[in-house]
Length: 384
Image (cartoon, rainbow, N blue to C red):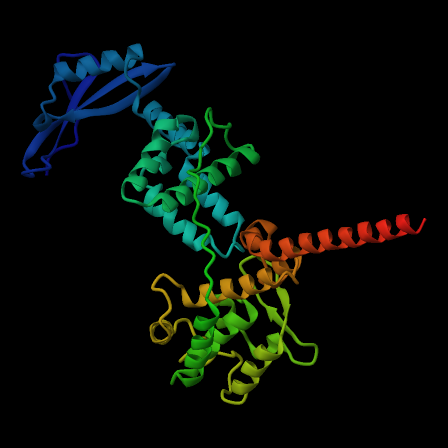
């Protein structure tokens, strides 16, 4: 076995030992340097002969270390640790987003946003420090999506980016950006509706369809305006038949909500109440679970009725419910907001235009009342 004895060279502070070659396991020289820095004796490995190290090359390295041109190994390790600590202290956009997600565990829509962030931001500008972010970086994300026809997706992704930056600024983790993230304006608030003939055909088809589970889900979407996920997750304990209310647990808006149970919805519930020994109104295949999908049956019903291809059966029926109430002129926007469990009135305003007919009738009524007053005043004047 090769000796570990130190062998001097013609250069001060340079020695070598015999070691094994990494490649061939044959004996080879391994050069070391010794020097003093700040009064401390330092001994460090320079390199192997097989890596083209020589006493002269080792001596040049020793001189650079003594002069400070090259850090000692210990100084290098300390510098790397300091750089890593500084890196960890800096919030990249990825770190800010992950922190935002951790601080909002109750946000029901967050899993969709996480997917968008991972797909369009994490491996690109997500790695940047917000201070390094340029308007050009944001434009590239927007243009890449818009070129593929995904204008709505571009708006959603940039909104996530802006939300992430705002989160960091509000908590004092980063400085505000030097520019404003502009979100592409969209005009895609679809308000789906059905004509009376279509609605009548749908109800007849629901009565005749073989899959009454899917039919009942569609009926409840139409009769209550509930969201798809809210209907799927309904439990019998959420139904108060005595008071006539439905409790919506863990809705999109966050807090539990209660909406009235009208007679049509009650009839649907009572028609299936005794069919299943399960806590869920619409149980899944496994015990203790709820249904998660019935797309095939619902799509079959849509085609049988002849509804437009773009009509989304469950979400569309929620729109139909809201549209009927809004156009009746008998339900104000605040009440409609509560029935739809919208968190803010902004979403409910998409139905405001449907009240135009009712508003016009009210305006015409005011005209008639004024005419009556004027006619009455004219009679009084003639009497005098």
